[in-house]
Image (tube, rainbow, N blue to C red; front, side, top):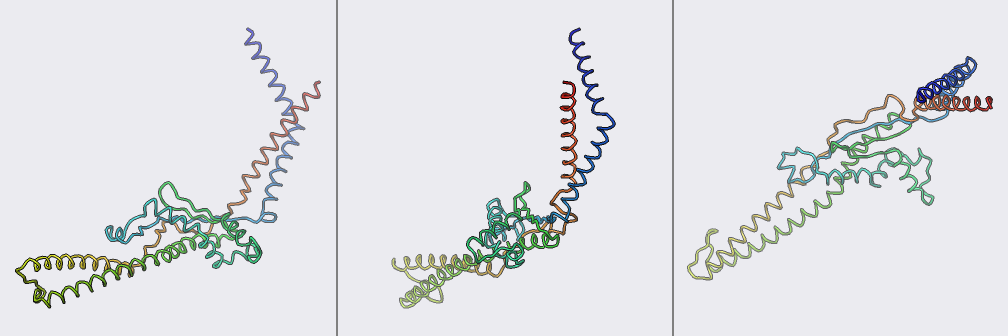
Length: 299
């Protein structure tokens, strides 16, 4: 009985509150205020007051970098996690930021004086605010750019992908050339050693037409030494030829599975979301104020 009485009492109180809120006068001003709030936020978030920003995104897969793996997989394959992380570091590097500034004249667009102390750091921070480079759950890489011009946002995203491949190839070329020159030196050194050994054997009549002939013990040792040197020379030549051919093959480019295109609408500000939020906040605030006002009047 008591529970039923409390339930009926609660229902009565709710009816009183609702009847107070649904008064014609209150609903009229609530509707006017809600519409006004929506329209004001919609107006002040328009391009008249806030410059819209457009977002474009390119999605790529990082390719294999090692020539040996490219050869084994016939030039087809995606990079490992380590290669993906390394490629992302290149895309986020200051070399990339400098290249973007040179390509799009970003310092002038952002009104940043690079000659004053901290100007370069300010430019880097500003560019990073508008660029997002992340690894996706599918092991692809997302390159997203935010700009006040929709065409520029798309061009910058695609340029980042292109510049990333160029910077990567330039960085690795120095190491590839160093490895090539070192392999060539080792091959030439071993070739000279084999030539010197052949001359020694020829002088002792142990080598005839490229074949060793000897019946005494030192000749057998010379034979073993000569054959081992030939095997080592062949190995060094194979290594040298592999590196030489790898220099003739350009590094694989990123697999662009979704190039960036110009956005249909601005990504910021979200005018509809902000306007609806303002409308909801206004209605909730007015309801609370009106209920408090009712309690004050009753007292």
